[in-house]
Length: 301
Image (cartoon, rainbow, N blue to C red; front, side, top):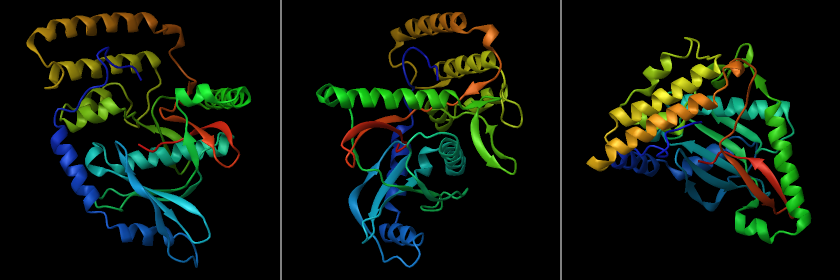
């Protein structure tokens, strides 16, 4: 996803959204989280938390364990932080996981259960995933790995990217499961688009000018033009795009330069399908089970 050169947009109305988010989290009854998880294991005894909840930008995760050692993650979307609703987010995420599981050998957490709803009530929408034990890998840890483990990590990363590249689709957008299987039927939602929508800047109206009514877009050049218009929208309408008066001209100039460079990068001959799957949350972990480095796809934020 391309964005303006000054980086991701910051939500101007952040205090209000964060307050609503914190109130939403406080309203989640933790005993109901345990009851919910237990309901998906037939004749299983009640489970308990084995770690504290962890909050990301768009989800809060609860970690539960059953007496036989089985561990799950109950992931609840943070409705106040989702301008387009939890249903739309989860439907696309689940469809993407199902495509990756059925058409690749990329390691991903096993999907246990999910429920999607238009309601903003806590636990009305959720995903339950297999808990994957491991240690998150960063650059400092990577340098300390034995050469054999580094080679294994790079090989697994290459394998993931190769398999993702082979997942081809006829249009740009988000995946959705329907009567005819999993297809691209929804407009894209990036972090910047979500932030703009929360602020009331209506980037969705810009998307509507480019996407077909069924949520598909079949032109890469139009997609690039749409991203540039969304970036211009943030600069022109957001109260947080310029913090000091003398920054305005400089920001506008660099926005103009960015548009010129982007139009040079876009190849008009590569305008149409196939389009490939991309994933913005590739996490590398050291497997505690096998004591070797590997790469896996996660979406915990």
